Length: 291
Image (cartoon, rainbow, N blue to C red; front, top):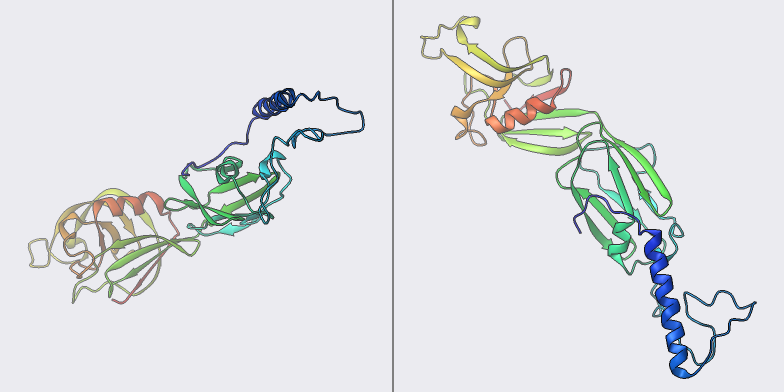
């Protein structure tokens, strides 16, 4: 089932089922010629069926080794929810719900689980076994998302880490983004070519520009020189005051992921550079290695 959240069965639906069971029991008794007279001390006669010889139970007993339908008594299971209350997790963390008894009706179980994130995050359920269901985000939890989970009377409230770190590897031509230590994006990239290598080290995001002009003459190379340039660039994220940026470079997409052709900057596709620009904040860490 791919619903992000599920709702507990309405009490009115339970009343309908109760009434149906009573009606069926009475009808069964009429067929056998028995009149159902409930003695005062015989409680309850339902939902298992009339406790009268010759009148079968409406709900048969569960087969050996299997639990009866657990959601007939909401809140009786007290499942365990992980991450626990107050936890700080990474961007790919699943929500694990573990029941104390095997679940027969998985759809009913999923419908009783309410997941409430502060940001809209689509995801889906996956059953690990008969007592363990897992909910996974389709992609990742955005940084600092607050999540509350309610199921069968148990609640957990946790938060996604605000730690947003990038690792650029010039030797593998990749640019990896992590939230709380979990990898959420891996982009093909191009780094500085020989003679213009990107600097190795750990840097902080300094400022961002949705559009800017990059001009080699600002660091002493005329735009008419063989290595000169003057380019309109989108989604430029500065990581050094010396002119190293993560930015969109649609002219180098053929090299991104396989070779280094820039003048020291980290080249990404326009789509990937925009995602990074939209999600990174000033002060976030960008590590460069392998250059």
